[in-house]
Image (cartoon, rainbow, N blue to C red; front, side, top):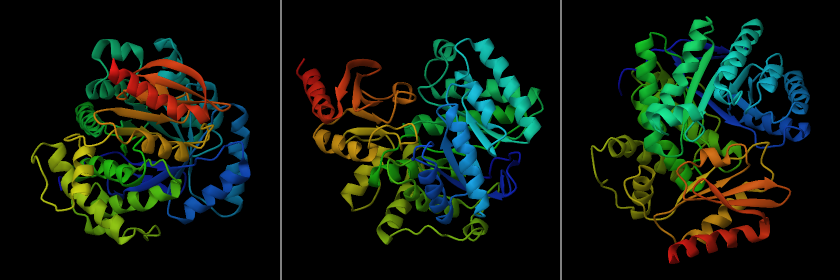
Amino acid sequence: MKEALSTREVRVGASVVIGSGHPIVVQTMCNTRTSDVRATVAQCRRLAAAGAQLIRITVPSMADVAHLQEIHTQLRSEGIETPLVADIHFSSEIAMAVVPVVEKIRINPGNFHPDHEKARALFGEFLELCKKYDRAIRIGLNHGSLGKYIVERYGNTPEAMALAAMEWVDMCIDAHFYNVMVSLKASNTVVMVNAYRELARRMQERGVVFPLHVGVTEAGNGDSGRIKSCVAISTLLSEGIGNTIRVSLTEDPANELPVARYLADRYGMAGQAGHDEGCHARPDRASLSPREASILKVACDWGAPLLNHEVDDIPIEDEYLKDEIMQACRRKFYKPEYIACPGCGRTLYNLEETFNRVKEATSGFKDVVIAVMGCIVNGPGEMADADYGYVGEGFGKVTLYRKKDPVLRHIPEDEAVDKLVELIWQDRQD
């Protein structure tokens, strides 16, 4: 393991410290409707008991700010002190409204306003409010959701992702606000690893290194989602990059925690070269089956050598596992590549069930990337690598995309999977 990246410390509430010299923090995100306070509290209760150290909750509307407050109050009244993270998209107004409510806020400041200078001004106001309440923030940029001005200058590349993040990092430093974490997620493991490496390099050059939240976004589910997450996250953790992690699976969010705990314990303390200390830093309350533990181990063992092109093959007899790892590292494609968001309170249909139906219906295709996205908020942008996209509109309707272009809108859900297969076949005939 390489010497870990030396980062600042960030405090999230009274109980969590993220950064060099501290154990890697494991987090997840609710997939309940935030407006369903009872269901969200129940899920938070279950996730905290399973070992989640941070729990993120989407806040899609101003009305949900009050729901978030109620959720926070109820959890604290039960003695559950796990810090909550408000997940905000586009609205600076909602971002500022949640600052008094929860311990941390995740935002993409570039989406605060279509006019970039206005977005910068609103971000400055947001930082001043966070100072007042002593809140932590995560600047979260994803592949495919970069601002137009960055893409036009630098393309949709790992370098562009790092450059975009550094603008907001510089603003935080100039404002003397240091309770900051940064993430640059992608579903493509090569893009994701290179983006984080570039960001780490640039922060070191700047002289201020904030902790990094590491994860593969829209990893999917089952073995594929776990392997894709492990090969990329382990590659970075083995280089000392990463202080808090989330494994994004299109499943019950509790299923993410054993995988994330395995990674956190394998790579130990953030900011220390060894891993023995971290293995016993916290109780392992999220267990793995022997098969799952074996799969994660092999994925971690071979992820970095494959992603770094140090090897071209791996000496294991399990051909299925070999194919899965090779595909996760973008070295071989033996089946469709899937991008699927894990779902959250914005998702308006049964994402896990639908994703499994899409996988079953399209399994015979190769050399194609198919995205299944929960909603229109992130869907079109974050399925940047996809050849085809299935995006929920809500109210039982779906939009199908070819690349970034919507080609079929308002399709009933019960017809959408068949229409997707027809679209792929039609394109292959042309």
